[in-house]
Amino acid sequence: MRTATGRPLVAQAFLGVITLSRPLSTLVKPEVLFAVLRGPRRSPLAGPPLTPEERKAVLTAKEPSGTQAAG
Image (cartoon, rainbow, N blue to C red; front, side):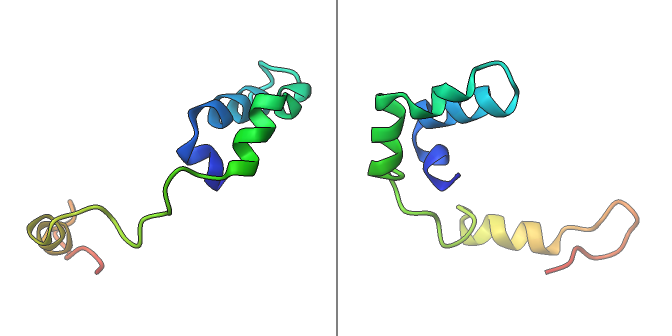
């Protein structure tokens, strides 16, 4: 799954199979297998890609009911 997030070819093959719009054999095509073996293009993010100002805004935002957001 992690590889699918960084490689569109793998994501397309995976989603095609789980939505039953492509045959299972799609996952064992050479180009898909090679992409899976290579892994994701980038390492996963350590946290959300927010600036300090954005993070503060998210954490201090009020919920619709008037209670503070969990943070």
